[in-house]
Amino acid sequence: MSEAAPNTSVIADAAPRRRGLFIGGREEAAASGKTFATRDPATGALLAEVAEAGAADVDRAVAAARQAFDAGPWPALPARERGRLLRRLAEAIERHADELAEIETRDNGKPIFESRQIDLPEAAAVFDYYAGWADKIEGSVVPVAGPYHAYTRREPVGVVGAITPWNFPLLLASWKIAPALACGCTVVLKPAEQTPLSALRLAELAAEAGVPPGVLNVVPGFGPTAGAALARHPGVDKIAFTGSTAVGHEVMRLAAETNKRISLELGGKSPNLVFPDADLDAAVRGAYNAIFYGKGEVCAAGSRLLVASSIHDRFLEKLVERTRKLVPGDPMHPKTKLGALVSAEQMERVLGYIASGRSEGAAVVLGGERAAVPGLEHGNFVQATIFDRVRPEMRIAREEIFGPVLATLEFHDFEEAIARANDTCYGLAAAVWTRDLALAHRAARALKAGTVWVNTYNQYDPAAPFGGFRQSGFGRELGKQALDLYTETKCVWVNLQE
Ligand code: NAI
Ligand code: MG
Image (cartoon, rainbow, N blue to C red; front, side):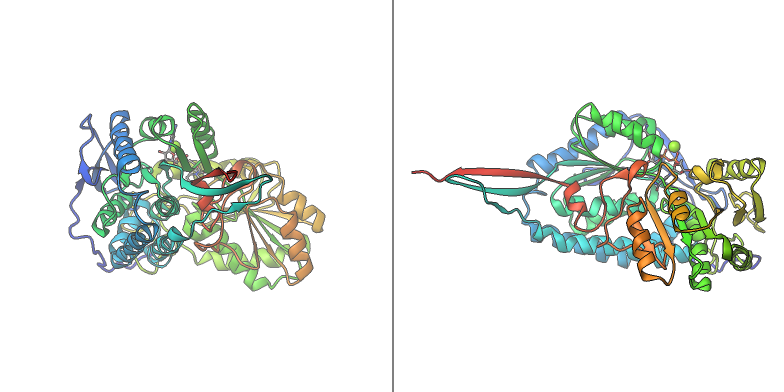
């Protein structure tokens, strides 16, 4: 994008600032006094020096959360009052949407239109949705044999440790915090080191909305230190993690030491299947959104395009034509559709995958290089990249790239389409494009994935459960299913004999 971005900044001043940890309702320095830098991935500019939590700080945050849970007001508050506070937080997010959107875009590099139109409205909607659940979490009467009255209670699981990634910093934190608080749990959140700023602002807004001290604590820091300290902390009852599959395995091991409840939302290599009878223009739009939305740094990205051989050439021609117009630009410019990758490290990973695709013999039909954005020479930009002639055994067909890189494979019939689609260790999402209703439902049954989209892609809603099969994780976030993650079921037996 050659035109300069209009000055749309709503953050008061451009000077780097200092941010503390958020523990027990206030901002605090780290015990070690250490800080780390968080940078704008489009410009390289320092956004803030952030207090770096270590094990001692995680201890303090867990103690604050324990106090707010064990002795404090939160689980004891009338459920409707908890719901009211969550709704006030949803409204505060809406009121501060411009500010939060800018924080998100500057910290992550995602286009401002995405932050404004997706991340922010969705984060507010998640709090609004779980505000409604707070006073509707019911037990039941169990028809047991004998002279007994047995009933269940759904009790909050306790202190929740939430560990979140950098791709949707505020939204994925909301997916965990909102249901946890609705259920009466308290939370210690460890945001990704690349993108800690929106979670810190969220904690301030929660406090302003009236959420009591200690109920929501935020401890920015690094995975092997702050993250690991949280995952193994004996004062934490449950870990909710989103991130890479490798770290998910490590978090499981750490959490196992104290038998914590755990839910994992990990990576994916989601297949997007286009059958010959599909509405081709709609499927092209869908394939484009599936991989290029969020720079492809999306756990459910449709990174494997499986196209019927009979329409492959026509389809790819249309897709390339559409994608040619997608050039990376200044994330703060309202017209930018492809932003900067979150970090130099992530950009190198993505470029490494592009090199591996080339060397394994796949054909680059578009992009394939680091992109130069005028005025932003230090930005982590990668061209929208489409590979054709990808074979199932290639790394770009098997491993999560987490960038704007599409791998195209072919299939000849339904059986081969499903076999190829399921030929992965992952199972987060999948999509099918067809006008044949029965075929669509048959595919939806056969695909091993937690979400299947038919003639659409990347649809999410606070009411719709989301999560993975196989190595994409377990547990379902969002929807009423997420209430299971944050409650324990207690069965009470009462002897009715005189
Ligand atoms: P990561 O898995 O290292 O980071 C996710 C979170 O886990 C961060 O908050 C991080 O600080 C924390 N963490 C890291 N090591 C930890 C440990 N030993 N104990 C506890 N917490 C720990 O992801 P990373 O390295 O930033 O990205 C690498 C790849 O992971 C990406 O290229 C992508 O393939 C995948 N990924 C998938 C995500 C998803 O949405 N499912 C999100 C982010 C990354
Ligand atoms: Mg990492």
